[in-house]
Length: 282
Image 1: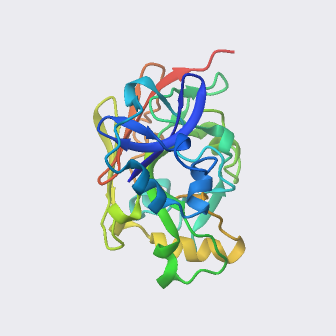
Image 2: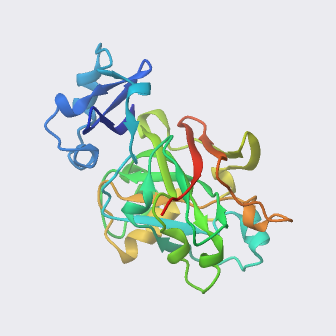
């Protein structure tokens, strides 16, 4: 299934994407939101509810929100592809390098990614987002895939000058409307555990990044196992699994996103996340 959170006629709901529209599961099921559906393992109920159902609303009539607007945690992974480690001139670490993103820094598909007036260094980072289905602590790597609810596209937009100003990355990674998350999540029944996913980033139609999950330094099961040692993962948590080489800030000359640009993140088996770039008005 493709599951999304959306706003239509001023009301926020969640549903399944079918036939160019959305079946509004918020009207059919008792779960308050998509995070609650995941926590309640309501996937069978969702499948039953959409069987033979026609969309309640067309996709072009809704505003798609971040797939999980209210996760307990968003944990991002840095330096998880060898070519990105090389281009940043950093050393490969034995364990994953992690940082956090705030939920209120996110926006959904087709929503503008904002370039703040404090910077002209807004960079793209195409990534695969992993949505946790079953929570847990100290999850074994061999069991990790059973804790995944699904996958989505993520653009970990980065304000590079502020990110690079110190050894900590929090400031440059949490400006409002810089973390694009969507357009929907695809559940694991459509992405088997042995799937090799291809990630592509395009800026104004030009390919900037391309990688597969086989190129990750720390695999998705390894990330889940490592993260769950220091924090208990909860249903609806999001792990943003790292970006490959080709980011704009490391090109020569650097290539940063500007007002009027369009950035797309594509993952096979998932879809395409697209966001226009707009200068923030203050």
